[in-house]
Length: 78
Image (cartoon, rainbow, N blue to C red; front, top):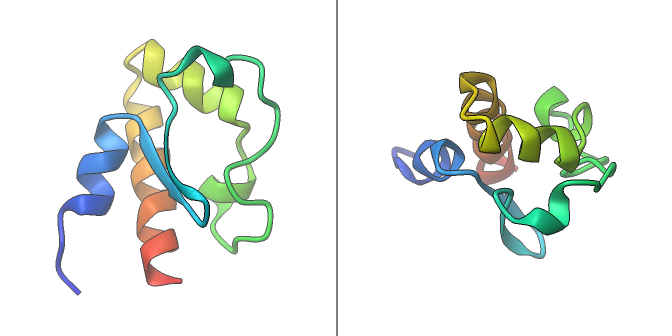
């Protein structure tokens, strides 16, 4: 499986979920304390809130891109 979609999406603030992709740049995630996927084995998916990821994306912190890419790769692998 060789595709740039999971990492490209992560770099642009998009996370893939079982309900479809979500854009964490959106203001509706600013106070959302739920994780991306609490049932996932991926630490990036269950260990960080959407609010924190929203903050990282809006602040253009590289950690946000890394965590979202990690989540997306784990999602596609699942």
